[in-house]
Image (cartoon, each protein chain N blue to C red):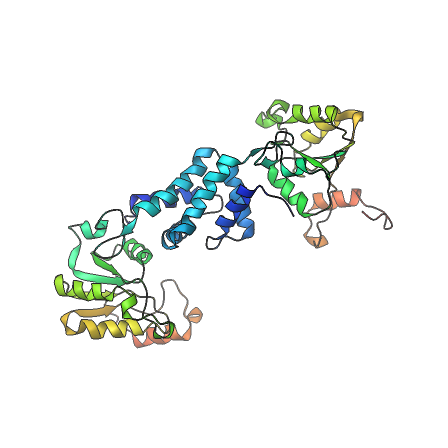
Length: 202
Length: 202
């Protein structure tokens, strides 16, 4: 087998840890990192280090932030009456891209899963309940993945948040541009149960 | 648009420089690098830096090496009578994987291309001619990409190396496992012109 220099071997191995990067891609990326002008290669090295040093959790919503509060929590134009609950910071990016939502967020850090031993104490649920107590929140929108078995979290939250605020969840149904015959039966069933009057524009 | 923290934006941008990493992959990898345990993320950062610091060109064959001479040039079991000329260090890895070759290498660093202004002085051709003078080389194997327009380099080399050594090139023909009807006409033409007697086992 080819005898890579040790430092190249280590570079290939650490690239291969990344998701979706297989052995062949790792080798190709490693050679690129060796052959590209040095500043470009070191730019990635530095970016990883700086990101890990500087990015922390927002003290209020647990979004990624370089400051005590993230840019959304700091933005006075965002409505404090609406709170959107997501599993991970990535989901905030997806929701922001829609440009449909102008309220605040709360990152749970996971979903309840009694089978896997993930109880309320492992998630940022206390922090959420506290925010609902202290902030002028009127609606909590659950923007959680519509996974099978992911019903425990909405159930728990709607019980805990009770009548104090309105708890809503994202609509489930056919995805935009999707063909009816490609939709699985669960999606189609939910689309059917959630049908709306034609003059009731969402 | 989502307001990523600056350090995250920079991480996404530097990932996106990598070949085959598009904007969506860059975002996914960046979030992974933020969410994975810190030592795993820093391992990649360090591996890039260390590779760029420690890996240099072998002083004899220009393969990648951490020492003055690469592991192949240092290996006394490799035959000094055979020299295989490749374009880039990566090609050495491909050839070593075949386990068919036990001689030495020489990395040219490119192919002659008069149209693109790449003349002999831009490649490691002087170094190659010098090696052929000083080392006990009997055969020079040209393991160059069989690209169209890539004929200038073999032509130049066979003239320069002249009758002093035997100059050979890799066989061209049908790839292993390839179907005849999938082969392009150039490949098929070369396979036909290069046909061999059945009893002449390669």
